[in-house]
Image 1 (cartoon, rainbow, N blue to C red):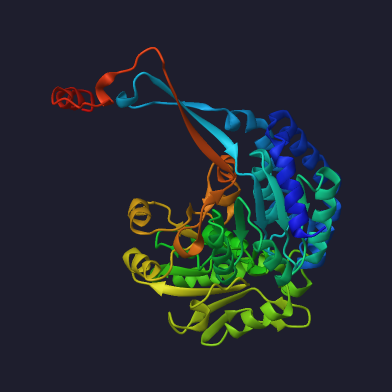
Image 2 (image 1 turned 90 degrees about the vertical axis):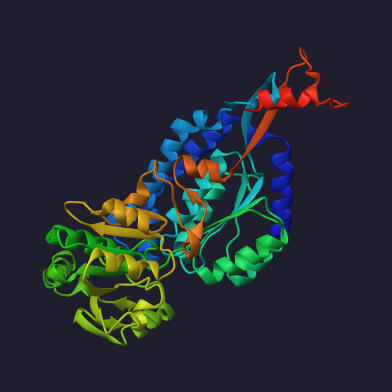
Length: 456
C-alpha cells in the first residue's frame, strides 16, 4: 500500500470511532506489551547488530523503559482520558464548563537512530493511548531494529490503526506530502527544519525533540569521585550517542585536576584497558558519523583515549582539553564519545558561558552544598536539569521531557505523552432556566453599573 492509501484507510477507521473506546485502547496497549516481552531477546539482538549494544544496555535504555511506560499508561489511562470540570466566568452565569480530551486523528511519528526502539515506541504509546491512528517512520540507519519493530506492530495492530513506513529520504518526502493531524519528530536540527517547513504547509501542529550541547557544571564543593563516575557513565553510554549526554564539562579550577584524574580512572574501570574489547562499549552508527566525530579532535589536547578504527566504527572514550571555546569540539553537538573539559573561575563564569550558547536540552550540576542551585536554575534556561546525576532524569514518567529554543519544543513521557497527542476541547453548557437581559440591546446606561459590579 502507498502512504496515501494507508492514511486514507486510517482516516476511515478513525471516523468509525473505534479508537475512542478506552477498553479497546488498553487492550491494544496490553497486547503491545505482551509482544515486546515475548520478543525482548530478539529486540536486544537487533540493537546489538545496529549499535553493538550489550543486552544489559539494550534492556535498561530501550525495552525496559518502554515496558515501564506502557504499563504506567495502562494503569493511568482512565484518569487521563476522563473529562474534567472547569469553572466559568460570572458573565456566563448560569452555566457549566467541561474539558473533553479528544484525539487529534491520524498522526505521524519519526524516530532517531541512536535509541531506535525506545524513541519510536515511547511517543507511539502516548498516541495510541490518546485514541489516534498512527503511521511510524523508523530510522533507516538502524535497519535491524526497524525490521523487528515492523514485525511487532504488524502482529498487534491492523494497518488501518497503526502502520510502519520504512525507508530513507524519499519515504520521508512521501509522508510529508500528506496532511496529518499531528507530527512528532525526534532527530537533528537540519531534519527538524525540513519537517517544520512541511508541517507549516498544512498548518499541522508538531513536537520537535532535538538536542544540543548539554553542559555539565562541576562546582568546587562537588563530590569529585562520584561526579566523575556518573559523568563517565552518562557520557559514554551508547558511545556518547545520546541527545542528553553531557556534551562538555565546566569545572571549577580548584578541582579540575582531580576531576580529570577520576574521569580517566572510571573510564578504565568501566571499559578496561582496551575499550574496543569491552562487551559493554557500543559502536558509532556508521562510518560517516565516525569520520565527523574524529574531525572534532582537531584543536584539542587529548588527555586520555583518542583511539579510532573507522572500519570497526569505533572511537575510544576520550577526554579532551580544548584550546578554547572556539575549538571544533565546542561548536557543534558532539553526539559521540568525546568529552571536552574547560576550567572556570566561578559558577557565575560557568553560567555566562552557558548563556552565550543556544539553550540546551539538558543541564547538569554537581555540588554538595547546593547553595547556588536556585541561582543556577533562575539564570539559565534548558529543557531539563539534573543535579548530581546525568541522563536518568528522562526516565521519570512524572517529569515531562522536552527541549526549549534550539533544543526543541513540546514534551512527552508519562502523562505528557497522552497530552501531546490530545486536543483538550472546552465545552460550555448554558442553562435555559435563566436568561439575563444585560447583554441584549438596547444597552441602557444602567447596564454599565451592573456590568461593573459583576465583572470585578
